[in-house]
Length: 205
Image 1 (cartoon, rainbow, N blue to C red):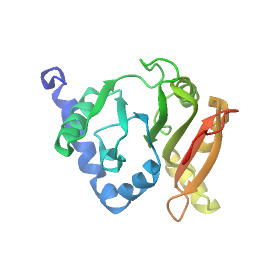
Image 2 (image 1 turned 30 degrees about the vertical axis):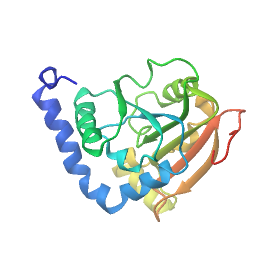
Image 3 (image 1 turned 30 degrees about the horizontal axis):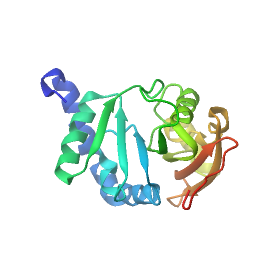
Image 4 (image 1 turned 60 degrees about the vertical axis):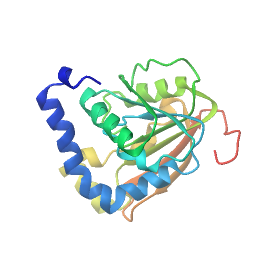
């Protein structure tokens, strides 16, 4: 990634993202990402890879292709992968129009993605296209909490953190296998899904 072609503000934004997210990563997100990646194997598409915060959770032996819309984020991710001694192919791409053939990945994995994409159902449909039959989608998402009072409060003050993400999967062509709370209020959840009508075909999927 040519840093000269990335603007100063874009580079600052990527740096600031890491800086702002560092406390959450240390306190909880690293543990959440470990749960997200547990049992993942084969060829993996990591979506919205950002600056590579999830690299530490990659299981040994996986072949990972990471995509993000931001060149600045990918530049930091590339440097992080180099420091960790990881081979990760990084591709700048729009999640709604991925430059990959059909059925090329065993797993698709992402952290805090659907809350930010502008057409989440269309994005889910594109992910369904690139995963192989019997492959698995793994998403770590912040969603509307289970407690009624907190959910109502967030829906007023911070609706971005009160989305009913689980409702999107069937509309995008996915069958939800698991929805697991990773924090006490149920605001952070792990989702496992497979293409609608196709069940996993191997152990751990």
